[in-house]
Image 1 (cartoon, rainbow, N blue to C red):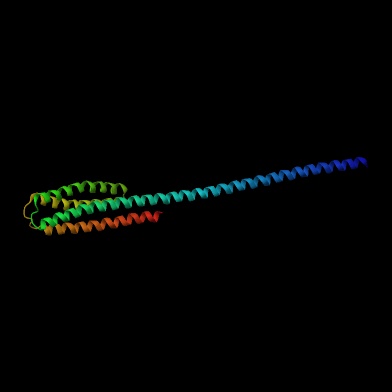
Image 2 (cartoon, helix red, strand yellow; image 1 turned 30 degrees about the vertical axis):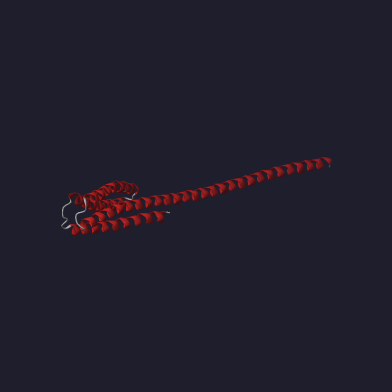
Amino acid sequence: MVDSTVWVAAVSAGGALAGSGLTGFLASRVERRKTEAAERQAERQQAATDRIQVRELQVEHQRWRRDRRQAAYASFLLAVDDLRHLAESGSSALAQGIPDHEHAEELRSSIEARFKDARTALATVRLEGPRALGEAADQLHGTVTICARFIQARLADSSPQEGLIDVYLDLTQAIQDSEGRFLGEAEKALSELMEAS
Protein backbone atom coordinates (compact mmCIF):
# COMPACT_ATOMS: atom_id res chain seq x y z
CA MET A 1 0.00 0.00 0.00
CA VAL A 2 2.89 2.25 0.60
CA ASP A 3 3.97 1.61 -2.84
CA SER A 4 0.63 2.57 -4.20
CA THR A 5 0.64 5.77 -2.15
CA VAL A 6 4.03 6.69 -3.51
CA TRP A 7 2.87 5.73 -6.90
CA VAL A 8 -0.27 7.89 -6.58
CA ALA A 9 1.83 10.75 -5.27
CA ALA A 10 4.29 10.38 -8.13
CA VAL A 11 1.50 10.23 -10.71
CA SER A 12 -0.20 13.20 -9.06
CA ALA A 13 3.04 15.18 -9.06
CA GLY A 14 3.67 14.19 -12.66
CA GLY A 15 0.11 15.15 -13.58
CA ALA A 16 0.47 18.46 -11.79
CA LEU A 17 3.76 19.12 -13.61
CA ALA A 18 2.26 18.12 -16.93
CA GLY A 19 -0.85 20.20 -16.23
CA SER A 20 1.19 23.22 -15.27
CA GLY A 21 3.42 22.69 -18.31
CA LEU A 22 0.38 22.43 -20.57
CA THR A 23 -1.19 25.45 -18.88
CA GLY A 24 2.05 27.37 -19.31
CA PHE A 25 2.28 26.30 -22.96
CA LEU A 26 -1.31 27.34 -23.65
CA ALA A 27 -0.88 30.60 -21.77
CA SER A 28 2.25 31.29 -23.83
CA ARG A 29 0.35 30.68 -27.07
CA VAL A 30 -2.50 32.90 -25.95
CA GLU A 31 -0.04 35.63 -24.96
CA ARG A 32 1.77 35.32 -28.30
CA ARG A 33 -1.56 35.60 -30.17
CA LYS A 34 -2.46 38.66 -28.10
CA THR A 35 0.93 40.19 -28.91
CA GLU A 36 0.53 39.41 -32.62
CA ALA A 37 -2.99 40.86 -32.59
CA ALA A 38 -1.71 43.98 -30.84
CA GLU A 39 1.10 44.29 -33.39
CA ARG A 40 -1.36 43.91 -36.28
CA GLN A 41 -3.61 46.52 -34.68
CA ALA A 42 -0.63 48.86 -34.25
CA GLU A 43 0.33 48.30 -37.91
CA ARG A 44 -3.23 49.06 -39.03
CA GLN A 45 -3.27 52.21 -36.91
CA GLN A 46 0.11 53.27 -38.31
CA ALA A 47 -1.09 52.60 -41.86
CA ALA A 48 -4.23 54.66 -41.18
CA THR A 49 -2.12 57.46 -39.71
CA ASP A 50 0.20 57.30 -42.73
CA ARG A 51 -2.77 57.50 -45.12
CA ILE A 52 -4.12 60.52 -43.25
CA GLN A 53 -0.71 62.21 -43.36
CA VAL A 54 -0.35 61.48 -47.07
CA ARG A 55 -3.81 62.90 -47.71
CA GLU A 56 -3.01 66.01 -45.69
CA LEU A 57 0.20 66.46 -47.67
CA GLN A 58 -1.71 66.03 -50.93
CA VAL A 59 -4.26 68.63 -49.84
CA GLU A 60 -1.49 71.02 -48.80
CA HIS A 61 0.27 70.48 -52.13
CA GLN A 62 -2.96 71.19 -54.03
CA ARG A 63 -3.42 74.41 -52.03
CA TRP A 64 0.16 75.40 -52.81
CA ARG A 65 -0.39 74.70 -56.51
CA ARG A 66 -3.67 76.62 -56.49
CA ASP A 67 -2.08 79.62 -54.73
CA ARG A 68 0.88 79.55 -57.09
CA ARG A 69 -1.36 79.39 -60.15
CA GLN A 70 -3.64 82.09 -58.81
CA ALA A 71 -0.64 84.38 -58.27
CA ALA A 72 0.64 83.67 -61.79
CA TYR A 73 -2.77 84.36 -63.34
CA ALA A 74 -3.17 87.59 -61.37
CA SER A 75 0.33 88.74 -62.29
CA PHE A 76 -0.38 88.06 -65.95
CA LEU A 77 -3.67 89.96 -65.85
CA LEU A 78 -2.00 92.94 -64.17
CA ALA A 79 0.83 93.00 -66.73
CA VAL A 80 -1.60 92.78 -69.64
CA ASP A 81 -3.83 95.39 -68.03
CA ASP A 82 -0.88 97.80 -67.65
CA LEU A 83 -0.10 97.36 -71.32
CA ARG A 84 -3.72 97.91 -72.27
CA HIS A 85 -3.99 101.07 -70.15
CA LEU A 86 -0.89 102.49 -71.81
CA ALA A 87 -2.42 101.74 -75.21
CA GLU A 88 -5.61 103.51 -74.08
CA SER A 89 -3.55 106.52 -72.98
CA GLY A 90 -1.88 106.57 -76.37
CA SER A 91 -5.21 106.24 -78.12
CA SER A 92 -6.64 109.12 -76.08
CA ALA A 93 -3.64 111.28 -76.90
CA LEU A 94 -4.00 110.46 -80.58
CA ALA A 95 -7.76 111.12 -80.53
CA GLN A 96 -7.04 114.64 -79.30
CA GLY A 97 -4.74 115.30 -82.24
CA ILE A 98 -1.09 114.67 -82.89
CA PRO A 99 0.63 114.58 -79.46
CA ASP A 100 3.87 116.45 -78.95
CA HIS A 101 6.96 114.41 -79.72
CA GLU A 102 8.11 114.16 -76.09
CA HIS A 103 4.75 112.86 -74.81
CA ALA A 104 4.45 110.42 -77.72
CA GLU A 105 7.96 109.11 -77.10
CA GLU A 106 7.27 108.70 -73.39
CA LEU A 107 4.13 106.64 -74.14
CA ARG A 108 5.97 104.53 -76.73
CA SER A 109 8.82 103.83 -74.28
CA SER A 110 6.39 102.93 -71.51
CA ILE A 111 4.56 100.53 -73.82
CA GLU A 112 7.84 98.93 -74.84
CA ALA A 113 8.87 98.46 -71.20
CA ARG A 114 5.58 96.74 -70.38
CA PHE A 115 5.97 94.22 -73.21
CA LYS A 116 8.74 92.45 -71.26
CA ASP A 117 6.61 92.27 -68.11
CA ALA A 118 3.70 90.85 -70.06
CA ARG A 119 5.90 88.25 -71.82
CA THR A 120 7.41 87.15 -68.51
CA ALA A 121 3.98 86.82 -66.91
CA LEU A 122 2.74 84.91 -69.96
CA ALA A 123 5.64 82.45 -69.68
CA THR A 124 4.78 81.83 -66.03
CA VAL A 125 1.13 81.15 -66.88
CA ARG A 126 2.20 78.71 -69.58
CA LEU A 127 4.43 76.88 -67.13
CA GLU A 128 1.75 76.71 -64.45
CA GLY A 129 -0.83 75.46 -66.93
CA PRO A 130 -3.11 73.91 -67.77
CA ARG A 131 -2.68 73.93 -71.54
CA ALA A 132 -6.12 75.40 -72.33
CA LEU A 133 -5.38 78.31 -70.02
CA GLY A 134 -1.96 78.82 -71.63
CA GLU A 135 -3.66 79.01 -75.01
CA ALA A 136 -6.19 81.54 -73.69
CA ALA A 137 -3.33 83.55 -72.20
CA ASP A 138 -1.50 83.45 -75.55
CA GLN A 139 -4.62 84.76 -77.26
CA LEU A 140 -5.10 87.58 -74.73
CA HIS A 141 -1.43 88.51 -74.80
CA GLY A 142 -1.40 88.47 -78.59
CA THR A 143 -4.49 90.66 -78.86
CA VAL A 144 -3.21 93.20 -76.34
CA THR A 145 0.18 93.18 -78.05
CA ILE A 146 -1.41 93.92 -81.44
CA CYS A 147 -3.38 96.76 -79.91
CA ALA A 148 -0.36 98.22 -78.10
CA ARG A 149 1.88 97.85 -81.19
CA PHE A 150 -0.79 99.56 -83.29
CA ILE A 151 -0.93 102.53 -80.92
CA GLN A 152 2.85 102.55 -80.59
CA ALA A 153 3.21 102.74 -84.39
CA ARG A 154 0.59 105.49 -84.63
CA LEU A 155 2.47 107.48 -81.98
CA ALA A 156 5.70 107.06 -83.93
CA ASP A 157 4.43 108.20 -87.34
CA SER A 158 2.93 111.51 -86.09
CA SER A 159 0.49 111.70 -88.97
CA PRO A 160 -3.27 112.30 -88.88
CA GLN A 161 -5.05 109.33 -87.40
CA GLU A 162 -7.93 108.70 -89.76
CA GLY A 163 -9.89 105.58 -88.85
CA LEU A 164 -8.01 105.16 -85.59
CA ILE A 165 -11.14 105.00 -83.47
CA ASP A 166 -12.74 102.21 -85.54
CA VAL A 167 -9.61 100.07 -85.56
CA TYR A 168 -9.02 100.67 -81.87
CA LEU A 169 -12.61 99.75 -80.98
CA ASP A 170 -12.30 96.51 -82.93
CA LEU A 171 -9.08 95.71 -81.09
CA THR A 172 -10.54 96.50 -77.67
CA GLN A 173 -13.52 94.25 -78.39
CA ALA A 174 -11.11 91.45 -79.33
CA ILE A 175 -9.24 92.09 -76.06
CA GLN A 176 -12.45 91.84 -74.05
CA ASP A 177 -13.36 88.57 -75.77
CA SER A 178 -9.88 87.15 -75.13
CA GLU A 179 -9.95 88.28 -71.53
CA GLY A 180 -13.32 86.61 -71.02
CA ARG A 181 -11.93 83.35 -72.38
CA PHE A 182 -8.83 83.63 -70.18
CA LEU A 183 -10.88 84.33 -67.05
CA GLY A 184 -13.17 81.39 -67.79
CA GLU A 185 -10.23 79.03 -68.22
CA ALA A 186 -8.55 80.40 -65.08
CA GLU A 187 -11.69 79.86 -63.03
CA LYS A 188 -12.01 76.34 -64.38
CA ALA A 189 -8.35 75.52 -63.63
CA LEU A 190 -8.55 76.84 -60.08
CA SER A 191 -11.85 75.03 -59.47
CA GLU A 192 -10.33 71.74 -60.60
CA LEU A 193 -7.54 72.19 -58.08
CA MET A 194 -10.04 73.00 -55.35
CA GLU A 195 -12.09 69.89 -56.14
CA ALA A 196 -8.97 67.72 -56.09
CA SER A 197 -8.22 68.81 -52.55
